[in-house]
Image (cartoon, helix red, strand yellow):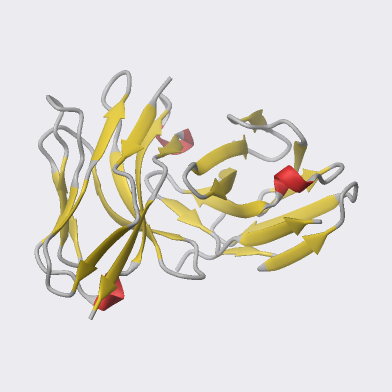
Length: 115
Length: 110
């Protein structure tokens, strides 16, 4: 079946450091890809998404590019802030009918940014 | 704004109790989901529903059941709670292109 693998955490960085969180996937067809973020004590929020190969999703300074050739969707940010501390989940959508698609998640990566 | 609400943020139950987790969405979405979140395992799908009275098993349905009597409400039921069901439970509701999550219920079974 479809699956998503993220880099192991936790990840700890200093403020203004460059961030990369790796995500690779296994899927039949061409799923949409997502990054979700979970801040402490909250539910998941969509951070960004890409729906086809070579698409770049971006939001709040984060970026990820849908790479079909390497089946990857790595999350990057050039200069992280303390407020970026959260758990990040990579996910793909599966299912033929768009409105009824399910999300398959990676294991999550906890990010801590120190001032 | 779409709102997905869950009846409790924190819940403590005893082994063997019947537990109800409630989820309500206010955007008339047909598709609703229950996930379980555990450290190192990410989110795993328990059950989902495409419409009222419709339900389908996800990846880990054992020990759970669901009920969808009204479009806006999707309930997760633990028939006889066990300690290995201690977890964070997240409800989600899906429009045509976007999935919205509730804040989660942290359930502890002692």
